[in-house]
Amino acid sequence: MTLDAFLRGFFLGIGLIVAIGAQNAFVLRQGLRREHVLAVVLACALSDAVLIAIGVFALASVTQVMPALVPMLRWGGVAFLSCYGALAFRRAFAGGAALDPGQGVARPLAPVLATCLALTWFNPHVYLDTVLLVGSVATGFPGARGAFAAGAMTASFVFFFALGFGARLLEPIFVRPLAWRWLDAGIGVVMWAIAFGLAIG
Image 1: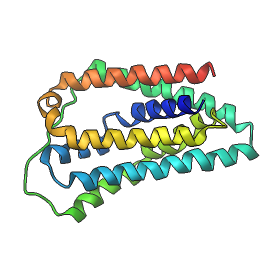
Image 2 (image 1 turned 90 degrees about the vertical axis):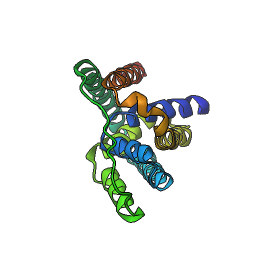
Image 3 (image 1 turned 30 degrees about the vertical axis):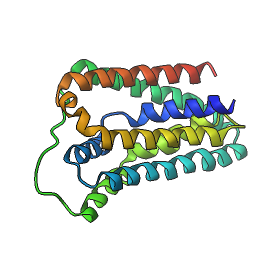
């Protein structure tokens, strides 16, 4: 049960965080520029860990007082994941996304971190994903919420470190729009698979 919860948390975290967005594009760009990469990936991963902990443990306390909230969150999570996956498939079908890392003068650490934290904490999707969605799915693991949270947190660290430090290896790939289409298609598959598993309990 604990390993299963950890793995489900990990794959849910990866499926949510890997979606193309402003934060990931910023981390990838910093990695391609090789500029303050460690500070940026740590800021992103630690922020995610805090938000995941709030979602998993604070939301769990609320559901103990309001048990009717659990099925509402469950089916709300199914709906959200289904829509999330559908949007990923739509992006994959439409195409057109590509990365332009941009070149220029290296910036000091402070403004880089400020931009990174703003993209993380002022983004409403971060709260939907890490607090509400991860927290609602975690209610399905009443005896292993810690393992589920650890899995989701691990996914954040693995993804951000791989993205930031592996960016230089990915540059020849992700300047091509086709790579983003395949990535979005994979996101869609993961999201629908998780939604199906949540729906059947």
